[in-house]
Length: 158
Image (cartoon, rainbow, N blue to C red):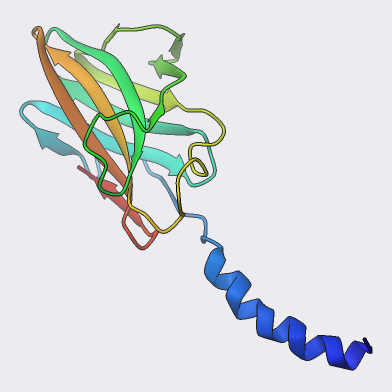
């Protein structure tokens, strides 16, 4: 095929390729700008980037609060259903590979997921969340923090 004949075919594919790609999204802010609170637990996503495997948060929690598990969830999955489970957690610079981990008071928390967390679902144009399974004074609680909305745009919050 001559070069001139290939050019229109290539140009016709460019918009299709662009629709299939998700523009990278993310947040990198200091704590204290957009905390969301529910029943005494405040969670603020302070760092994430699509295609990275960790999400940084600032968490304020009442006494006797423990992080039992965390998961990455998409779209309309039920909270704490465990679409992509956590691999590790870092609380105030200390890595924990097994839980539960005490997080009462204020803490910087980074949750780490498998390398495929952004790719292990049926599409990129879905809402994404980090779900935190907690116990507060022995009572189970699930807290959901939004990362992106259904259009793939950054939409951090509870």
